[in-house]
Length: 361
Ligand SMILES: [Fe+2]
Image (cartoon, rainbow, N blue to C red; front, side):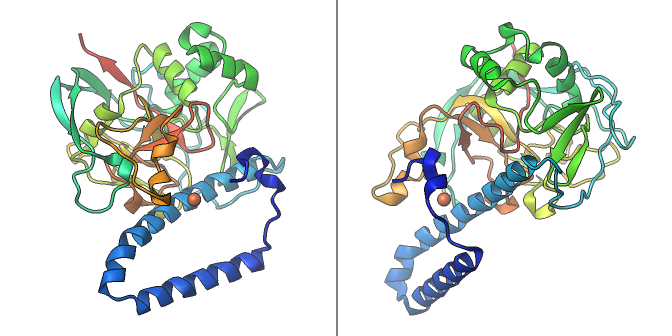
């Protein structure tokens, strides 16, 4: 196995060679499928299906890696022109404030908290259709009485935190987070730049003013947790998130929409449908992966399978936090309510954001 931090030392094929390699693999797989009898098809079908889902993960990583590379360029190149302009934030009680740096003036609906009773709930995939092994076994979990925010935290809500307290007040931070903030000299989410007193944001559509109505993104777990503390709330557990989303349609802003950036929910109903038809919970799928406060651990009874496929998820169940819901870089048909993404708490290059929760005593 190559050392990940030294993989730049490995020589790489040219683009032409890469396409040739891809073509040869496609031909081999097609041939295999054409020649396979029923028994062999039954054996390889699960592997091919897993491979296709894995390729969707590659596509998401390619997009976020491309963004990271372009962001190193001082000319801030445009990957794709923006499809949707920014909108103003009305200020909605989450320590929000009226928008001032946004390009358009369409209003966005206010957010609130909805209440969930204490209950025993089923967690994990029920076996219908594809899922990764880390989504099972399905099991029961205790969910406490809690309140859950109706939308993802917006940039406009988090701005006062970042400016006044976020990166200078250790009391809001986990110890390891505070160490990371100081070592990395963070003072804003990734891709934010302060210029002439205003915040700008590098997107795949180029450099543009921070839009306060958009879900905040490119933040680490440490920042999400610190912001929640500052806001007098907390991050939801992955079980709370799954309970809240289990009967929602998979709608939202995905890579299929080719926006490549989270979008605001508009009061006039513009934009893709997102969330419940009764309008209670919005933006549960797409836009930004939402950090949960749950460590990425095996569910009760989980055993990684034998061989290489068994290494797919189980070997990463250490030092990572669970994220839910998919992002604007995720394929729509890749995500499920039970889907568990995971990253180390300091990672910021994925489209990662948050949603607040609160305990009810
Ligand atoms: Fe891979």
